[in-house]
Length: 107
Image (cartoon, rainbow, N blue to C red; front, side, top):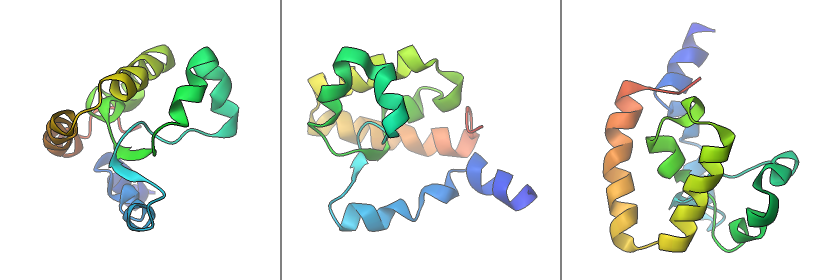
């Protein structure tokens, strides 16, 4: 639908996940949650995903989302996990704003 495309383009469909953040099930910034079927895509790196809470936004989201290959997504997630700092989270939050406004890679 047109409404659905608009919500997806500007990531408004992600807002309900804020409840998951409040319940400490997710973080605002972090690797995206993956489905059980996707764990094979992460191969030997999959265990690293269990060390952090999934996030609403992160490197993958600000780097082009669906325009980024899955291998690149894995690489970005592993970089985030290995190099996490509060400063990195702040940078990603600031980069999220223009990424959402532009809607690039949002299916």
